[in-house]
Amino acid sequence: MLLYIIDIIQILTVIVSSIFYYKYRYSPLKYICFYLWYATINDLTIGYYLDYILKETDFLYNIRQILLFALIYYILKKNIQKQIRRKVIDFLFLIYLTTLLIEIVFFKNFISNYLPLSYFTGGLVSLLGIMYYAIERLQSEDTTPIQKDLTVWFLMGNLIFWIGYLPVYIILNNYTYFHEDVINSLIVLKKIFIIVQNIIFIFGFIVSGRVRKS
Image 1: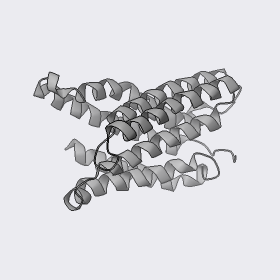
Image 2 (image 1 turned 60 degrees about the horizontal axis):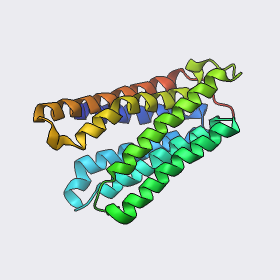
Image 3 (image 1 turned 180 degrees about the horizontal axis):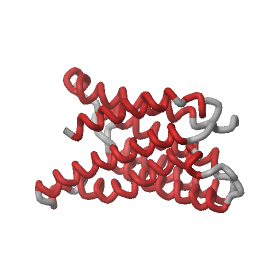
Image 4 (image 1 turned 180 degrees about the vertical axis):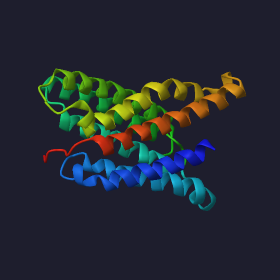
């Protein structure tokens, strides 16, 4: 049941992001819409079609992972002004990129294997990077109300998702140590985090104001 709810809310999210695209089409945030469309089509086609056609689909999830963290990095770099914090963001995502390359070269096949270590690392550095952005946003003289700032909504959705999901992800990747009922409950919790994240995105697209050209 939750799987269908996720499919529906993902579709609703990309529709809403397209309806309100005029608000942010001249800003770096415009890539959010493109990513959401890609991610939704990717997830739906894998779940309902490609798993039955292709022998391997893990590479599609790996591409989605890379695009997500590249998008978060790009938005953080465009919105963080203090040089020292920009360097920290560069360093954090360099850790992710290094982990990704090491995992591909030495441990996993990019086509046939999912990349759990780099996904976890990307989530962790995104979490830390968003916290840096939050500090700067609170200290800045930007007069835009927070609830009208689409950047805040997008990063907040990711922040809440990663805070909740990273502990679940660790447990799910060590599932042999846990009872089946615990694993099933965590899978449900993971799906709930995805739903909450998309609800935050939807509210953000609706209530945010126009983003200045950049």
